[in-house]
Image (cartoon, rainbow, N blue to C red; front, side):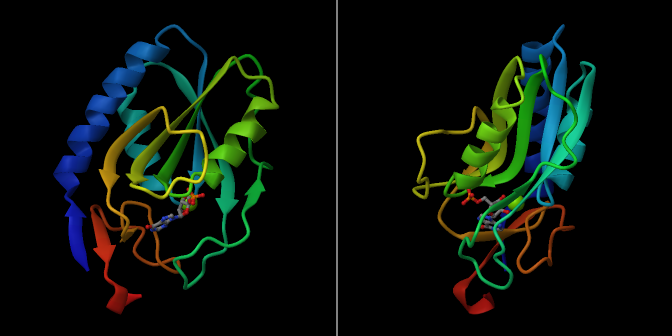
Length: 172
Ligand code: IMP
Ligand code: MG
């Protein structure tokens, strides 16, 4: 495994993104929606960097990758979503790869009549997007490699690592 983004780099970028989001959402009714399970570390740090009152909710999206690095069937479970009608929604995901997860989630959230929907991804994987939409905010752009850590998994391992690492072909 190669280290790609160190813990202190992540923390600095998350703090500055938090400041930007605090200005944007000051005086608004904000609900942050994290995409399970990959969002957990990023969301925990980002919400502590957003110093305006907001609510937190979660939604589950899984593409059933298992021990593969290719997306499979995409399933979105909105059963845990709080009511967002009339509120500003900020969807937080770990990585924007093909963009299909984000696209599906934005559509699911829009149908609940929020005041606005924006998206933030910790990472954008270069040259992989298959959709029109781009995240409104992101922390880092990365090359087309398979990454783990800071919430991201390979076959459900490595999520707890405080940095982002890349797995080489031989590790997969
Ligand atoms: P998308 O729908 O193709 O944009 O994929 C988004 C989801 O796929 C992310 O939320 C991750 O769960 C997963 N994913 C995509 N690329 C990676 C990666 O490099 N490492 C770990 N998970 C990934
Ligand atoms: Mg995910």
